Amino acid sequence: MSTRVMTVFGTRPEAVKMAPMVKTLDACPGIESLCCVTAQHREMLDSVLDIFQRRPDYDLDIMEPRQTLSTITSKCLLGMETVLEQAKPDLVLVHGDTSTTFAGALAAFYHKIPVGHVEAGLRTHDRYSPFPEEMNRVLVSRIAELHFCPTPANRANLLREGGSGQTLLITGNTVIDALQTTVQADYRFSTPILNHLDYQGRKIILVTCHRRENYGQPMAQIMTALRRLVDTHPETELVYPVHLSPVVQETAQQYLSGHPRIHLIAPLDVMEMHNLMARCYLVMTDSGGLQEEAPALGKPVLVLRRETERPEAVDAGTVKLAGVEEESIFEMGAALLEDPAAYAAMAHAVNPYGDGRACTRIAQAIQWRFGLRETPPEPFQAGSGTR
Ligand code: UD1
Ligand code: UDP
Image (cartoon, rainbow, N blue to C red; front, top):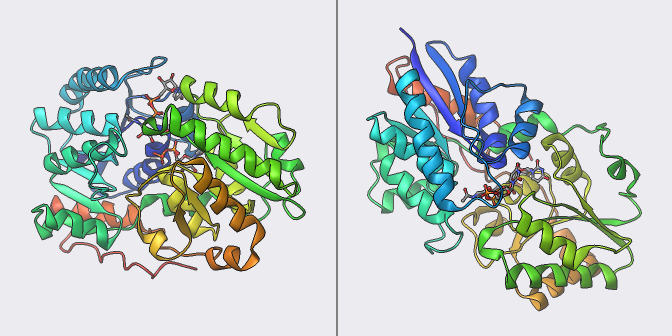
């Protein structure tokens, strides 16, 4: 009898990072791979599933406009009950820190099904930032029995919280696995504007901004700084694929629309996004995933947040925290646009987050846990990735 492993995810970033995981498990001897999506995101999730060509086995279809944390969590929890009773998996794999992640882990726990946590051990140590993600991570760490930590620092966080060494594996982040399949030197965009940008003659700033804790005043300040930056630097063009959250859409329209060199576009599919990132000059973002991807592509990142749970690329010098105040964002952006030495100091490719083999390690660790393999996988050695 094979071991039934059910991956559960629901949002765009989880899908980008879990789709390669599902495909690895699909091909893994001794494992029956099942995929359940909550569809906490709908269009933004489906777009990733289309690219990776994997249809889910179960789809809870929970998304509603302007959903709250309580509606997401309760709908996931209830929906998972039926799925888990039907499918009876031996292991549930969740990813990261979303409300789907927390509810998926809790639902499995209620059914006494062991949980594996992919992208485990990230911490800011501030329970309200990112909100609610930091608490989701902490709670999932308590529920999970297998912790797949992207980096040594993530593992150290869990050891400090009393985690047992045997269950804490350093795997690298699966996002680097994904990135290795999407970026192509001769890629041709299907979004017309992206084919017409002058990547050599102009400085293309790629922006994303969506976090709940930035809603309101911080997002207004971020966007005011971005507009000022473009206004004062005629050599720039700003491309912002705007998240479908109505709050974000309204704020982006209010502060950034009507400028000839600011392009507010629909969310990009992941092929478009990764290839745009590979060609742009600079990334300004509050996204977690972009903080991991851009350093691997040698692109400087200014993080539009007060803190980050991803200090590795900050230490490597390719990422800086710009905060959420207009002045600091403007000044740090201007320095990178005006000072070639400051730019060169940040624009080098580093891979602190993975070497493209995270999914294989996680699958091998699961085989080991269920007696399908004699030894655990070799851990990811930070710094061993391709540069
Ligand atoms: C969620 C995660 C966040 C993650 C982000 C990635 C939680 C609490 N938050 O935040 O950790 O960084 O996803 O993008 O789990 N919407 C659509 N279509 C879509 C997706 C979203 O219309 O495909 C709209 C809906 O109105 C929805 C709203 O966006 O209600 C917000 O989505 P939600 O998942 O609640 O929050 P995110 O900010 O996306
Ligand atoms: N992404 C994408 N299209 C976009 C914006 C982001 O494909 O228009 C990808 C991005 O490359 C990364 C992931 O989505 O892989 C990050 O998702 P997001 O920023 O929504 O969430 P976070 O990482 O902050 O949780």
